[in-house]
Length: 214
Image (tube, rainbow, N blue to C red; front, side, top):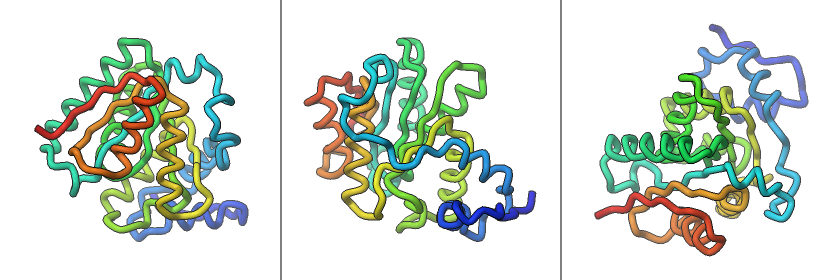
């Protein structure tokens, strides 16, 4: 399916950032407009006080490392994510937030979409750090296509930060924790965004399920 950019200047920046790589021929303007229809610009409030309790009660989020930092076999991580997500669904969770980073975030998102396609009544929420986060270091064409496909099929898409940078990633991590009651984490034991997210979740009393490097 050939890619045809929609004639709407409002979305020019978004289209170029998300669909601008050479590997976009499989994405149509229709796909993009479907995605745009799901976008909610820059979440209204970061305060957890603004989030209905029932929303958080049934929402689960993820944290984990990029593939090059994982230090745990990929197949084992995917199998564990499959088990944890199915357990969460069985426990009544029906909203799943992915931070949309390469590795654990997107593997978890793919698993949620797979279960949704199998008939599970669940939703995927994409929490992006900023527009164009898929254009950073390490994003080859394969990962960019996974990112785009996930955005197109997500039920909701949020951009947490307005500008690229580390602060936007931390804001996204905080937003995911503040909007959830369970965290599924894959952690290799080193400082960074994953540890920050786990620490915040534990401090706020979320259920935390961790796969750690042995």
